[in-house]
Length: 397
Image (cartoon, rainbow, N blue to C red; front, side, top):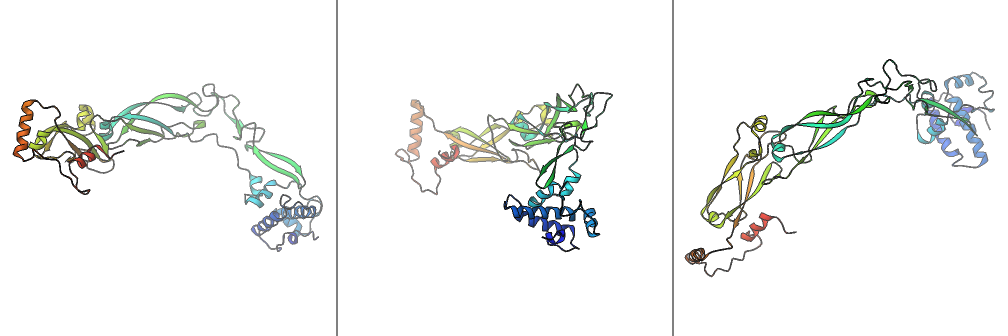
């Protein structure tokens, strides 16, 4: 077989480095012992590997083109020192010999810290109108003794003698291809390229310690259950005194005694006597602002808010009727305006009548011609009293 590396790889003498690499990848996939265990194929794979070793190295290629002897003869013991990464590159398209020669370099000791998450319970009024809360958080903070360096005062990190500051070491193993070189993180410095001879006693060389600290978080108006408020750079300080991550405060809104929030609207149910629904009435409903203290209302920019609002119940109101009070709901989180209060009216039918009440209701039934009323059957598209009552209390399970 020809000993010309160009002929072995099937490329011309003016082929560029990328063409040579593609040719080697193609042949290596076909001839690798894991694919073709035949002894003759293995010998050809060795020749292809030696050819690529010469042509992929500019100095060796130049020497061969000038008629020089490469590694004591191309057909001889070439392959000594051939990097295993070239073979891996042929199969996985990696960085090849360049990666093996240059390495990845030492790991950075200074890194960004992790984000942190805490939960905060708030009242519905606080979520609706905004508030300011003081928090106690446990996070990693900068070590004040070494100021993040990890070294005891008066000392400093020094370059690792094992890897010469590279953070990686070469490991050589002999195989049928010759010497296979691999690169691993340095065990002495754990890949950092530096050794701390005298670690800081306060942080054990990490550059940070855990501490409890106080934070002020401003909760904007209009937030809802599950909203996260981001506090930039208030999370964990990074290793080696690196920049802090972010702190996220996830809000959990407590249930309210009167209102249920749906988007920007506040929903509630008001029960009224049958007589009030028939004759009409005006009732007083406490607003969400009534939950705020004077200081909280002032902080929210509400001034002196109305703690109550009038709800007009028109004569003849049926059970399940909604009365809307505009602009007294939850402020928009982004934008302007507020939602509404939606009052669901539920009419209460008396269940215990004394003799006089029974007489009066019987007289009323007679006057209205309802003394023998048996109810009115309606179609599915007409919502009578029972349909409105069903809507008032939600769908059936």
